[in-house]
Length: 251
Image 1 (tube, one colour):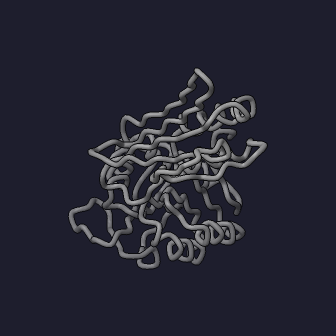
Image 2 (spheres, one colour; image 1 turned 45 degrees about the vertical axis):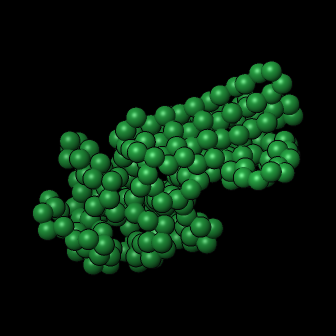
């Protein structure tokens, strides 16, 4: 059994992970971390990882980007592997993850879905053949409670495309204005926020008289929670280092 400390336990994803872990005997949430301490929870909830007294194998973080640096420090001090599934991380936090991963196992992915990671493989396969003659645009949609825009997944998809482009794309976030040139060297990334949309990402390759669309739709948050739980079970067996979904899928 994998014993988990869940950061962001009272959030949307925290509650989904808790439910799925309850239904699967391979996992147990032994403690939570959140700004709000809910005394009705089935496990103790603390304000910080340093306050947690329960013994655990791994930390899963679905919180807020500002919380991640301190959580990484506490995980390192406690010698606990950590799965970081929080999105919208600034560059300095990504660098901190790399530093911390020298002493503890760290797993990071901007999206925990198997489908998204297969989509990345597909994008990297077709982009070199289309880059010269097709404009590339992206539309991402999420629920109205999502704080960051564009989504971490949108940037993950964009970066995966850019990695195989002969001429690197400049990201343009929205296209407000009257004098846009809409250059092929640009990639437009457009964010939509509304209702309870779990997540939808569409990549458009628009050429002369033809259009190719690759789309991934998340129908529930379960797909991200399942991915995080699998990442946690994978990570507890690893040596210090920085791991991703590619490592999990290849395992």
